[in-house]
Length: 386
Image (cartoon, rainbow, N blue to C red; front, side, top):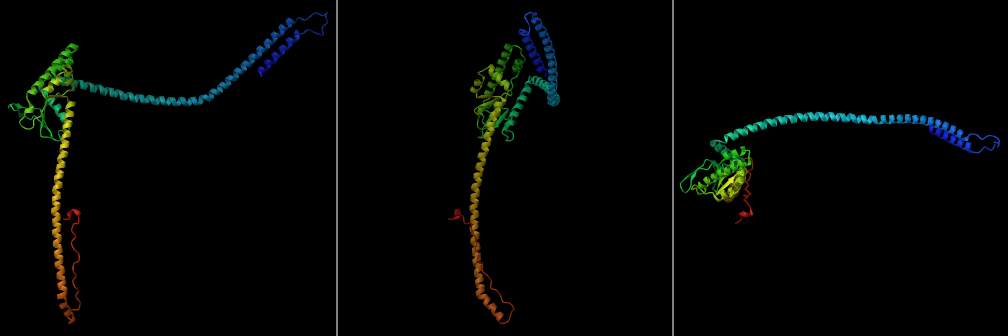
C-alpha cells in the first residue's frame, strides 16, 4: 500500500508541474503572469517531503514485515537445528568417554611397556656381564643349541646325543657338543662356540674406528674357532659313517652377521675346511630337513613292515584255506557214513522192529530215521581254484 501511495504522489506532482508550465488561456494580456518557477519549486519541495515520509513509512513497514518473516523462518529452522545439536552433544560426550577409556588403556600399556623395557635392559646388562665369563658363554651356547634342537622337533625322536665322543683315525679323542643321527646311519657333529669379548667391546665403542677394529678382532676369534674345529677331523670317526662336514653353531644371529661383514671371506674360509657356520635360524632350517628325512625314513620303514605283514598274512590265509578243504572233506565223509548207517537201519533193522508191532508189542508205530541231505560249503573264490 505504501508503494501505491508513493506512486500516486509522484504522478500528482508530475501533473501539477506540467499544468504550471502550460500557458494560461483564460488570462488576458493585461494581467501579470504568475511566477511559475516559484510555484514549481514549492510543489517539488512538497512532493519531496511527502515522498520521503511515504518512503520512510514503507521502509519501516517492510523492515517489520521482513523481521517477522525472518523470525518465523528462524523458529522453523531452530527446532531441527536444536535436535541435531543435541545429537552432536551426545556423540561428543560418548567420544570423550571413549577417549578417556582409551587414554587409560594407553597409559597402562605405556607403563607396562616401560616396565618391560626396564626389565629387558636389566636382563640384557646381566646377560652381557655373564657372557664375559668363558664358562658361562660355553653353557649358554650349549643351551641355545638345545633350544634350537627342541624347536626342530628332534628331542621326541631322540635324534641327538649331548657330549658324545669318539676317536678319529689318528687316535685323538674328539668330543662334539651334539651328535645328530641321520636316517642313513651316519651322524652330524655340532659344536657351539660363542665369541663375545671383542663383540662386546665393539658394542660399547662410541667411534666407528674402534667399532671396526673390534669387529675385525671378533671375526678373527671366530676364524680361530673354525681352525680348531677343523683340526678335530670329525669326518674321520671310526665309530660309524663319517660326516663330510661339521657344524659350528654361533648362538647369536648378530654374532655371525657382524663377523661376516667385518671379514667377508670368513664363510668361504670355513667351508674350505669342511666347517659350516650356522646361526640359530640356519641350524633350525638344517635340522628341520633332517627331521623330515627321519619322517620319510620312518614312512618307508613302515611301508616295508606292512609289505612283510601282508606277505605273511597271505601265506597264513593259504594254510587256513587248506584247513577249510580238509575239514569240509572230512565232514562230507562223516555225512556219507551217517547216511549209509541210516539206510542200513531203515532197510534191515526197522522191518524186524515192525513185526513186534504186528504181534501187539508196543502201542506206537516207530518212525524211520532221516538221512542228512546237506553237504559242507567250501570257499568258492576264483583264487582257490586249482
